[in-house]
Length: 85
Image 1: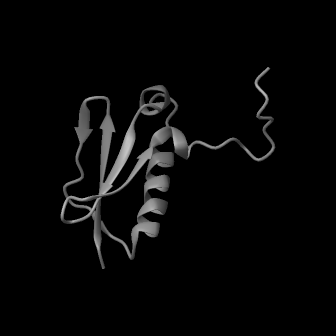
Image 2: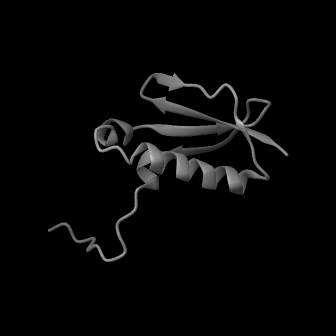
C-alpha cells in the first residue's frame, strides 16, 4: 500500500508530517485530506487562521499528489441559503 504524507502550509510556514499513513490510492488520500482539514477547522479559535492554509499531500518519493486548500473543505449546511445579500 502506498504511504502518503500530509503537510500543512500556512503562509511561509510548513508543518511536516514525518510518519505519513498507508492508503490504497490518491482518491483515499483526498478523502483523508478532507477529513483532516474538517477536523482542524472544528475548533472555532483556529478557523480564521486556517482558512488560508493548504494541506499538501506527498508520496514516499516526495512528489506532490495533491494540494487541498482548507477553504475548499468548507461546505454550507444543506439547508443554508447561499445568498449573501
